[in-house]
Amino acid sequence: TWRLYVGFFLVGLSQPLYQCTPALLSASWFPENERTMATGVALNSNQLGIGCAFVFGTILVETKEDIIPYFGLLSVIASIMFVGAALQFDDAPPTPPSDTARGVKG
Image (cartoon, rainbow, N blue to C red; front, side, top):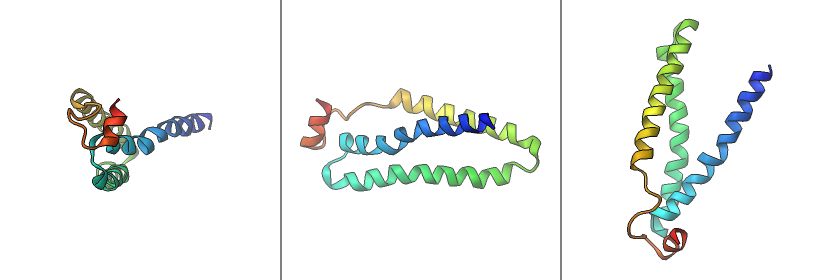
């Protein structure tokens, strides 16, 4: 059971990243009139991803032996997406979309 608690703890460490990051990104990349929509889309995309994992999990996992390959597939997809995003991501656009975005950039 201790491994379960360690897993919960590790998942809890990720909460600030996906809960707080969308607001900062929308402040840097979008003008004031688009920030609410950008933040909402970013936050709800997490829930969409969880839903897709549940749907594809029920399709791809039929026996308990299928669980490890399924998690391996998820790990490979997540790693590829992370590397692609990390290589292409900029902190802020070249031209700030608003005065407040200019202040965030420095």
